[in-house]
Length: 363
Image (cartoon, rainbow, N blue to C red):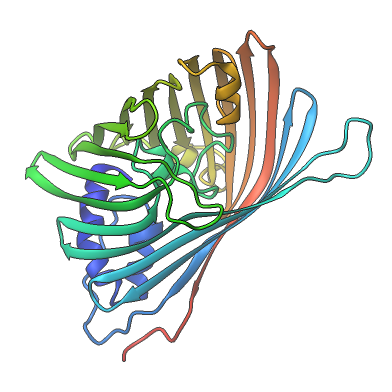
């Protein structure tokens, strides 16, 4: 979501809590969509949303079957309070080296469980477990039904682990040509719940959106308050040209664990002049990225999910939207590093669901 979308989000959320339609748009629709004020007679209802996915990854000739169920619960409490939560259930299955049946672990994770208080259109106060607002991929692009390419960017583990603490965020108009969004947060080492770990850190993100060219640029910063008390910083960019169905995004991140960047373009073939019925549902994607090792060494990098050596990767993909909320995905990537070069193939299907948990309509 670009900066103007974030600024509108804070204004929408008050109406979201009064109408299920507003709630759906504010959390799941594309940026820049205007939502009308809902009548005061409409009753807020909880929403169960999320996604199901079946994906096949073939890396260096080895097949991995990845199944995902990611439920999202939205619980409005009056006009100013909202409880949000997302869980992740993921099974990754492979054949043993000697052959046999596919088997593997089932991972269960609580990505976030937070309480939001919408103080005014410019400030939202959040407490609980939340997605760390470092860069843009972690918060805006991570869900399987939103991301354009299914493999994670190489730098994703840098400074993006979930935080347990408090956050202030919001947005406002600097002038008619510039909007600004911000997020500042503090995280504790642990909230005492088994399996939910975090580290002590503080940080923030700031972005500026220019409505004319539909361009956002921004920066992130994080300081660890334990162990070596290191700093991490990053930059991000997003551009949606007004006359072209293109999403161009990029991130750079640097920390003591490593550094790197990715740049990605996703082009919807809705302007094609032939096979319009099929091509308007088709999106082509390309991504280039690079990772550089930091101070902690290759073994520690691997434990964090980072490459064990300096790595370059190019990825290409095609998404076909069968209908709203249902898409087929396919991709190819090639990775280059001193540990070896290999191809990565991806194919699968992702489905987004949305269920109101109550009667929708007037009180």
